[in-house]
Amino acid sequence: MYVKQRSSMALAGVAMLAWTGLAGAQEAALDLSTPAQGYAQRAMPMMLAANDSAATPKTSSNIVKPAAQQEFKPSLFTGSNAHMALGLATVVTALATGLNTPAEVCDDGVCPPGVTYKRETDGTHAKLAKATVALAVATVATGLYYHWDDFHLEDGLTDPDNLHVILGMTGAALMAYATAKSSGSTTPVSHAGMGMVGAYGMIAAVKIAW
Image (cartoon, rainbow, N blue to C red; front, top):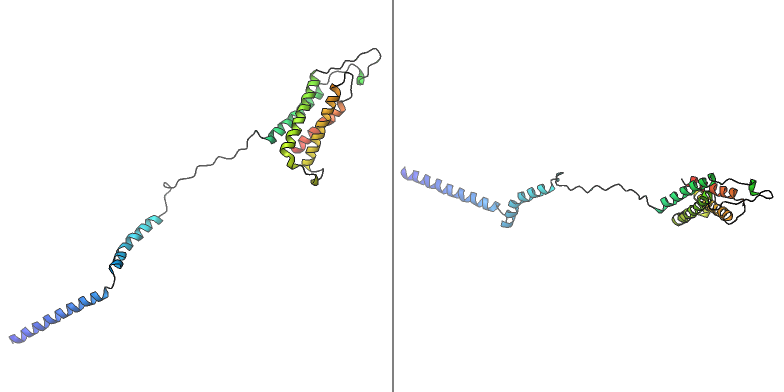
């Protein structure tokens, strides 16, 4: 009886050792990964965490906003504005010249026998006339320089840009001729009509453009 119990215990011990060895062998057989693969598996969670933090959108405090650009404001001192100012000044001085016409001693400049008519060649009217001509010439010069590309004969004479150029140049030429004709004579010279037509031409040119 005692021997039988001892045999049973021995068999049980052998069975336990065999089962333990078999379990260890199965675990060893299942673990086929290399050390590098094991390191990669352990590092993967850290890499995923780093990627998640990098992909997290930046907060508004970390974003540098570009400097606000100031609204563009064109300069007032341009060639086009100078041309416009000279044209308006020409019209003003032309009207002032007409309003300051000296009183005529003789009707239409024709004096009866024995009456001498002396023309005023250095008064307010004459000075304003010369100033008007100077401004008209400056207006035409700046217009040709800064707006020459706007003039195209193929567009026809009725084109607003073409009319502006034609009327402005014609008006300036008539006023210059009337002034030169009057200032170069010591006797009465009919020039008012020509000067007025020239002034109207300049006014029409200004009105078309602006």
